[in-house]
Amino acid sequence: MAAGAPRIFVSHLSGVTVFDPGGDHVGRVRDLVAMLRVGHRPPRLLGLVVELTSRRRIFLPMTRVTGVQAGQVITTGVLNVRRFEQRPTERLVFGELLDRRVRLVDTGEEVTVLDLSVRQLPARRDWEIDRIFVRRGAPRRTAGFRRHKGEALTVGWEAVTGFSLDEQGQGAETLLATFEQLRPADLANVLHHLSAKRRAEVAAALDDDRLADVLEELPEDDQIEILGKLKEERAADVLEAMDPDDAADLLSELPEQDQERLLSLMQPDDAADMRRLMAYEERTAGGLMTTEPVVLRPDATVADALARVRNPDLSPALAAQVYVCRPPDETPTGKYLGTVHFQRLLRDPPYTLVSSILDDDLQALSPQDSLPAVAGFFATYDMVAAPVVDDGGSLLGAVTVDDVLDHLLPEDWREHEFHELADGTGGEEAPGHGR
Image 1: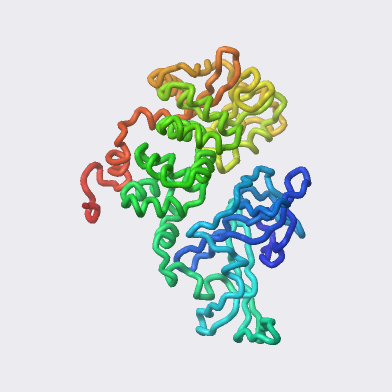
Image 2: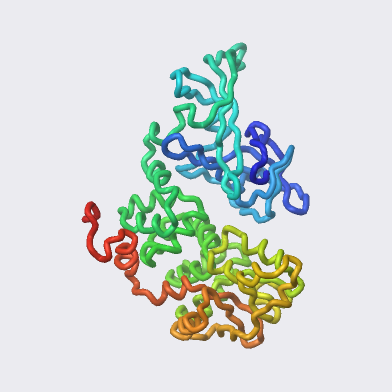
């Protein structure tokens, strides 16, 4: 369902067939997974529980759903087939929210939830539950069947009570919902200052993508502690969701037997990327780079390039330029031809071939270049990202300025400089921030 499309009532998704992009049958929708939020804010729809043809039930994140149409759900084709396990912050829509007794805010009258509607937020990939179809009057059982009598009406999520976390008092779940709007770096700072027990509870309740983003912002000791308390299969999933360079750095800090065990649980392509990055020294261009820059072939157009850099999963630094290479266009690529900067993409017509607007004068980094050399390159050429190319001319990845800064700053920088700036104290303790 594209942004701005009509709402969909969840009852219409029960048993719907799920297809991959090629039209092949994947499975059927058996439930929806939502996360309640504090106050009267509508819940986020996290994903679908899909039953495969093998009868195994898996979790399909909404970020991997490209279309919800009449009688079918279309996915990106990338599925994690590990068995679905419900987490503390998650609620099953069919299993836990439907047929529930709640109260209307205006009158205090008790009503029964018959259905819920979901919608995709405009200009975002997030989905939420926003409307509730309820029936007045208490349900009655007749000959073993549950029957409802009374007026039916559709109301907004904020028009009822009985769902919110405030009323349920659910510990870590309420804490997590309170932190939902924090940026990953800010949530990482909160986790860093929690007790080890509380930190583990919150980490266990975060979804894989959110936890991956937060881990990337945590000090090394916290990363290792949190990863060590996750089940191995989930730890592998979280590592896959992290930026490859950050995941490789974290893996490198683990004992060798733990590294191999986690790598064996990862998807083969992801594990291959990890092994390749771990082969480089940490403080070199090869150790700093990500293996997932935006790569285009020479016959791609400016329109193609702009479509790729619009991907909300890309960091601003990675989206600042695209790298043009001959096939194959997965790293390590065919011959690297040059870079096209985002500003140049904005100046040329959509039909322009990227091969005609290359910046091919700038020398690429070598994977063996030291951290000081990489930092000097960024400072000299005012770059926010730079290509890393091997001796054969293939693009191996890209280094971004944030990774350079992470390695140049003192190990305890999160404890000092950043928080002084964030508090606006200029190094002086702000009122109410003492410990």
